[in-house]
Length: 73
Image 1: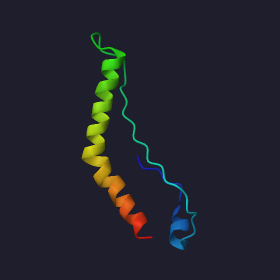
Image 2: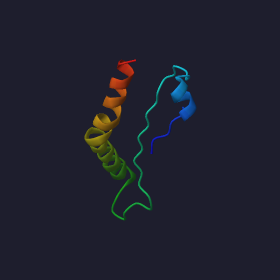
Image 3: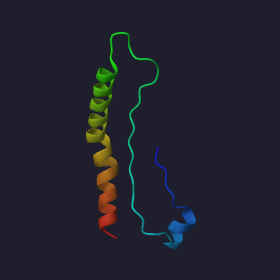
Image 4: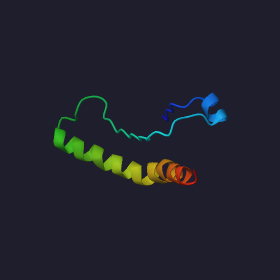
């Protein structure tokens, strides 16, 4: 999900403040831990998934285009 704080009117008029941008990425596990899994094992697995998804999708499809757009301003 992408959530913006700028509305369509502000974009049309070019009337929006120069503010910092934050990008959050969350990986979650729903439900209980597997019977043979520890919290540490689960955290390591979630971190691995997060890093793989960031590398495969977020960096190229969100962060790089965002940085390029900001650089052209």
